[in-house]
Image (cartoon, rainbow, N blue to C red; front, side, top):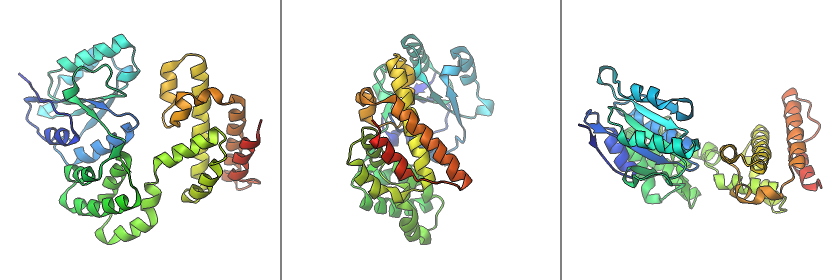
Length: 322
């Protein structure tokens, strides 16, 4: 009979995951919030150093429970696979409950990770890991010890120290970014990497979120922050960033007005929190559509090398529109 191991920290999760004996049935409920992509990268880095090399991503919105149940009971030559189950939070309440019951009763040989947006419908807190937005300084080095070999750990300690000097608060996303590069650079490259790339790779996401909020709400403080941060990224990045923010905002307004709450929640990923909560009601969709068209036209001009305007003008015109 399978032995259910229950822990709720990343450290315990990693230690148990390394065990390969088949009498351990490991099912985790992962509360990711906005950190899903970062955790998946963390998991890939970690699994690379274990005997379980495979991560299979399954979107349960497109997979029947019967089909998946049969798949999860089969182990080829005793191999253990990590199944990463997405989409449970987007299901109806009844489907959601059925999937949680399925996971609770699972007795197969594989590792299962259920990716959830919150824990409001989970009755197994001891199996739940909440991925934090911010990592405490004393926990940053521990992440490196959990997933890296000795050589990469030395690089990570140096990079993490430089990161902590630059930022009072370090996000989980930035920790994972540094974990990834600790594998690929030599100790002699760290100073050059810090000088040329670390600030660009680990610019505070909160700065971009705040910038977008100030812009979309036409707050005059936008221009001060825009001047401070503009040179960190290329024009191509800013075109892509503003196209994404404006498109998501347009669609979010449409879905909220028409009561499509589930789709609105999906499209709201990476939008400023103020816009998601109540700010969307104050925005003009027609102005946003006009801005989106201007950005698309500017993008085409840039790619053809014939631009007669610049992104500063486009953003300023949005501020002046009535």
